[in-house]
Amino acid sequence: MFISFIRPARRELLISFIILAVLLFGGRFLAFAGSTWNALTCAGTAIIFAVLATRLRAVRSLDVPLRTWFSGLLASAAIWSMLLGVIGTATATLNQHLSPWYALYDDFLITSGPAYPLDTNGIPYFMADAGQSVSSVLLTLLVYFFAFLAAAGVGALIGMIRIRSNAVLTVLAVGVLVIGLLAFAILLPGNARLTIPDQSYVTAFSNQGYAELFLIAGIPVALIGFLLAWWAARRIEV
Image 1 (cartoon, rainbow, N blue to C red):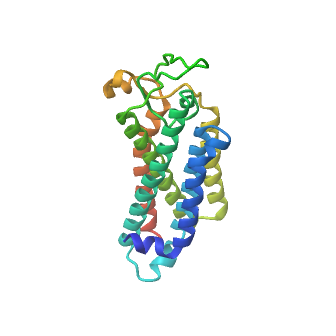
Image 2 (cartoon, rainbow, N blue to C red):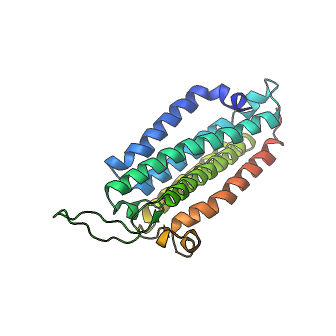
Image 3 (cartoon, one colour):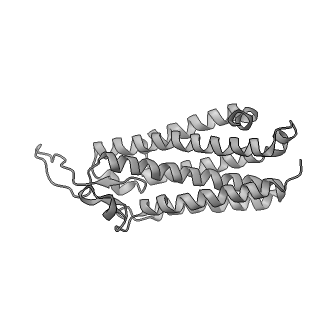
């Protein structure tokens, strides 16, 4: 099922993944905040899966069952999101290790406990909610994963809209998505993040942090996006 989905566009999919992976990992070392690169990667993911979804008729014309194609879509989105999630978590964790101030600029990053960076005299000082632990890294991975999965679901839905409607509506849908993600990344206050005080997962969600929103909202957005895409795909004539 996975092969049946990616075979018609395996080259474009591979090239797109490499480009997004490089930008997601290395972009924040060169310019802009981590949140900006996260949003750009989400937008890129949505556009890529929208393009792939528009090839439904071409794949169905080869006698590939709709259920097989859609299962391949889900598997591809999950693998894509997990791989990019691992890359995003790795670069966020690395940047936080290099500078405890980095967390102010990455709203996907979850921190845990204090950090003790060195001042200019080489003396460690206390910095609250800037440390990392296994639990915070795993939760950060979940945030990245569901954010990218939600973007893939929205992209698949946009692809269905493109097949069933005109190009103007599709351009408007993509434009709203991109502008919304960029505005969210740029205007979001950097200090509104989810932290895990005293290594406690339970009290973590009592904090007002936007990583929490990505994690909680990403699941239903992905689910609704793929369900609507499935509903639309079943009504598209080959």
